Length: 282
Image (cartoon, rainbow, N blue to C red; front, side, top):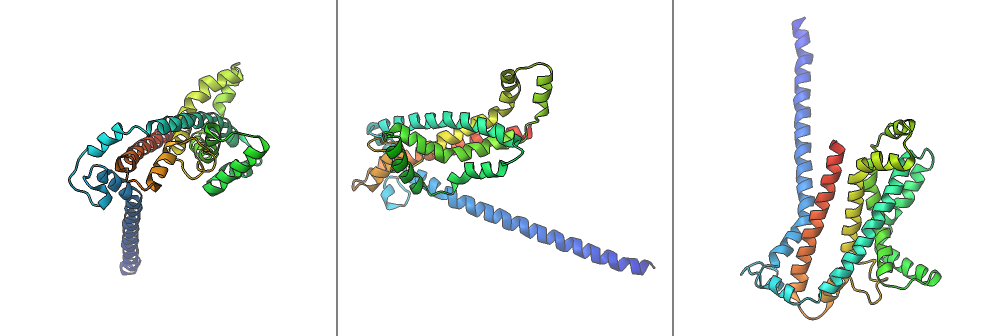
């Protein structure tokens, strides 16, 4: 009898060991794939930063490290005006994203019908090519609303691009919101504004901040959609693109300026993820 029971136990032990090996291999393959994809994303950015402090960056190989190019960058200040325009546009887009993502992000989780359809409509700009969006806004809004191409047209096209990301960041927080808190506050006599300000606002603050950061960051680095609606207005990405396409080799602008933009972009992205993670843990 004991021998008959030992056979299934042995098979179970072998099966458990085989499953453990499969899980271990899967974990290693996942780690390798994750590190590989991360390297594909960040290796060029890191290499750009290394070349920005190299003596001859146009060779593509680091060496003779120097800060000369950064000194030249702050001597040649042609990029300051485009930077100011980019910050102004990014600030407008950031505020629009915070307000709109808060309004829509609060309403979507409470909808009983049509939630999927509305969500699809809000996220569609993610799959529409940027060139198509730029041309459409240039033709439609200029023809029917006589919108003058410039700062506001750039802000509009940037908002169309950034809003889905801002909404996703807000939904991560608002979908976990307990509506019973508002019902309890209403039973205690709190007005709609008081319920929003005292209960919803603190709990949704990380989502609002994330929406604003997404709007600011995506606007600050946006290029393909801006080309068609900028007219004579020049943002920083448009300026660096024009300098890159020109025949002159403006090393300080191409390498150093883009390295600084990359550092700011990564810092804001990490801050956004940290804010969302902190809210999910609380």
